[in-house]
Amino acid sequence: DTEVTQTPKHLVMGMTNKKSLKCEQHMGHRAMYWYKQKAKKPPELMFVYSYEKLSINESVPSRFSPECPNSSLLNLHLHALQPEDSALYLCASSLILSATNEKLFFGSGTQLSVL
Amino acid sequence: GQQVMQIPQYQHVQEGEDFTTYCNSSTTLSNIQWYKQRPGGHPVFLIQLVKSGEVKKQKRLTFQFGEAKKNSSLHITATQTTDVGTYFCADNTDKLIFGTGTRLQVFP
Image 1 (cartoon, rainbow over the protein chains, first blue to last red):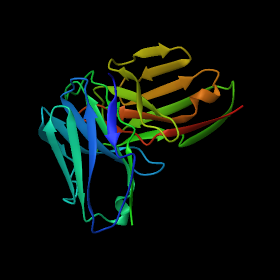
Image 2: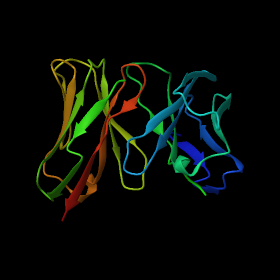
Image 3: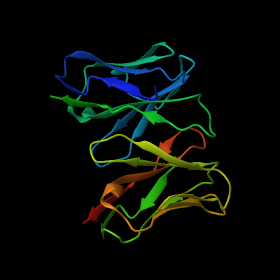
Image 4: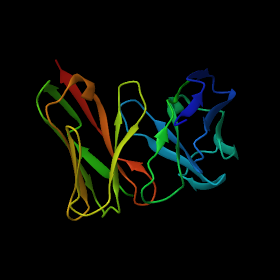
């Protein structure tokens, strides 16, 4: 199994809603990532978890709250989002968090629209 | 902060023509990765370059890492319609930071 699975594929939410994005991998990877991608732009790193601990937070607003319940799962909790937060949210995983030789496997993403 | 720029931003080619995208960093890179993202898809890993001056080939794709490890290039020989997509280099020195990307369109 070399897949990273993200749900839902599409999400529309209002600015007062609370929702969660889910990501799952069964490759035994111990590093998991959240990226945000606006249309025609590169993916931007948001968070990195290493061995279920938050390792990197790229100064992301607190309305985005990541969670890593176990080594296979990664969630992104959303609350009080703004329309400018509409984007494709990509989850990725790698064997470990390392500066060398670790390629990332990406999920298909959740296309989020905030109304 | 660290920036990785790619040129060109867009490239339209006729099928069978060659294509090159260039990646330039303001700082020395420990290693660089290349990803391809098809329209409506997600990034897919292509290759990683680590050594100064390294050249790697994958069929019609040739990847190079500059001698100073500040730039890299991807060259596609005889493009096909299946090559359509956005090609990103990514700086993996500290954490994976994507370059600005080059969008390739191939006309049959």
